[in-house]
Length: 200
Ligand code: MN3
Image: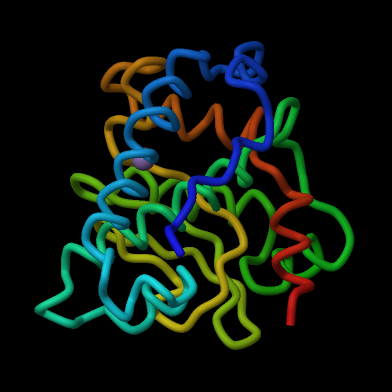
């Protein structure tokens, strides 16, 4: 069974009032994300990997020197779907409930979390991702290079920001810090993060 590109959880223009143009989604979802899906299907067609779940493909090909291309494309398919869900119109603000309590406990305060997340996103050199994760019961911020992700590391992802240049160049040109600030102020989907935290 071929791997598929899941639909965006909102219209291409839904985030325009919140700092991300439809053009960004035309390229980032319509071209970049789609290319990862197409490449993954080409690379796995006719192999035993074609019948595995996306999660299984990521876990089994990570660190396999003969499957670097499969891992990179599979992880980028997963990462982008996770990223689209990490955004929502009129997002940002502060989390509530259990997630808010866990952030306060493990980072000291929500402001401290924001500082750590922004710093990770700004200092990931070159292409990669910034993540809020649950690492065996402790919430942490990590950054990953290229396609690597918490799933491959055996951690639970709660929220992510794509900091590849293609993620922000249309809206922010080279100003990655402005993109990061806008994500935290207007886009971060804390409902999605709370749902991920609650998953077994
Ligand atoms: Mn991307």
